[in-house]
Image (cartoon, rainbow, N blue to C red; front, side):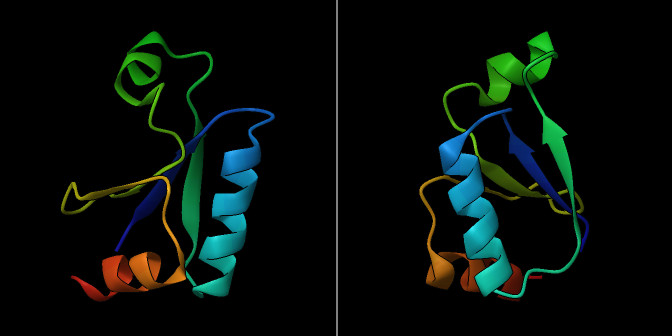
Length: 76
């Protein structure tokens, strides 16, 4: 599973998402900041942070908690 976390600079919600991912024992993921990319800004601007499974295209929008992340990670 290749995970991506879409986030913004100086984003308290993104910091909270990182804590939830750590608590869930999420595998390594790539962080992508959307601030300087107009396409990503349009797609994720009001939704960040968003966890995406690059392989399947599934996305988990904020707000998510430990149980939601664990369920997301369990689906392969």
